Amino acid sequence: MVIPQLTTIAIELDGSVAEVRLNRPERSNAINEAMWQELRAAFVWADTAREVRAVILSGAGRNFCAGIDLAMLAGVGQVVAHADPARSRETLRRVILDLQDCLTSVERCRKPVLAAIHGACIGGAIDLVSCCDMRYAAAGVQFSVREIDVGMTADVGTLQRLPKLIPDGIARELAYTGRSVDAREAQQIGLVNQTFDTPELLHAGVLRIAREIAAKSPLAIRGTKEMLNYGRDHSVADGLNYVATWNAAMLLSNDLEETAAALRERRPPRFVD
Image: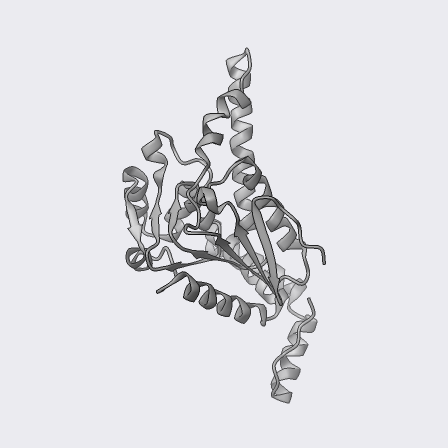
């Protein structure tokens, strides 16, 4: 298996767990143009690499991510410039849609993605972690929907995903005020699953959970993620109909037979990638 060599993101494979690490520590992992595109490349790779069964998303250095690189934001006007204002606005819409897709690639990845968050998680970083299956944080973390403080409406996923993760009123308060949320409050409102005392304990704890997931049936895990994401965006009736169709195709698998054999033989199951 060939691991992509990227300029702003580092990827490491530990058994069946891939770690995708934002790697601009000197800029607090602010998301520049290259990182947007490389995020998509990294998660397309994680999705298609058969050996990968779970993914940890982390950040190098003191902070997880400081959001969008302001230099990139300042240069948007030049990127979309056109003599016709309507064509300029159309180009800007396409740029925004592409940035949305870069982050949606995290959600689209069939393997569970666990965010390990420390330090600052600001602005576009909230959009990013909202795409993950689960979020875990170290003490000292600060979450902030900061777009309101730069005079813009968050446009790459926070306003759509955050109210599905935390109470609607809290999501609105954070979006309207830009105030910071610490680790204790983040866990209290359901933004993170668990907090750890240090970044080192955070990494070890998230890796343990990722390994536990990676030991399960890969086919069943992928189907579970598909159903959870579908059910979030559809009615209960639609979700039940979809899972019936899914399992009509996927239920009678080698993984099911292997699980039964492992129970009979009192051993851990061994699943193919």
